[in-house]
Length: 298
Ligand SMILES: [Zn+2]
Image (cartoon, rainbow, N blue to C red; front, side):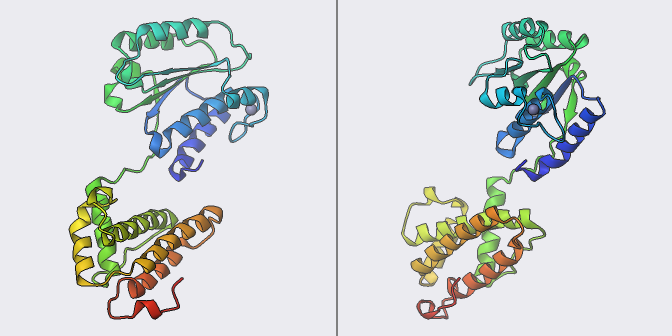
């Protein structure tokens, strides 16, 4: 899984499966940008796989059908934009599910987001779960667990995906502002405790440098990543000559660093990024030096 926080919940599910203790119905947070979709589908494939180990084998007939998107024992109900999931959709699924499995193995029903179930539809699922057909597994993704019918919720087992909180716009602006002060020598550079944190700071750095470049080119603030910082950008441009060539080199270096890290996770990203910050603080943000004559830019 490419989302580190999903590793722990995944191991727990695999552990239950290995002890033959998978629940008939699970629910989890619906947060596609943070990996919930990958988790849901990986779990569905795992349940359907005919020879799973710590994950689906990827090679059995079931896995091949799954990857082709044509598995006959996988059903998905999805709410359209602004619509709810009605009882007809659940009944239709129930009808198909009561037939024997096409592949002779497990069957999986996915509902997303389950907040969109009407009360009737939720009650219909509840009824099925009271006497669950053997080898039929339900996976429900919810935007807000509070929206689920409590009686239905009591039949479901929660999978805690341990999703990290999304930073709000204000928080992101504040992080970028602290980095800008550090690069200008007015504050200490942020502390990075691990590679995940360094990766997040690398993104902020790149966006900040791009913003500065745009601001020095008098591009409108609506195109900035951190629009809350436009006044600081403007002041910086007034107070000192911002070297556009060095700024775009720094942006390129950020992308290069991200690429290197992508291919080699062993890279000491916190160290490399802090070295880059030092360089940029000296050559991009220090007006006292003749930046054009420096050769030691990375
Ligand atoms: Zn398989």
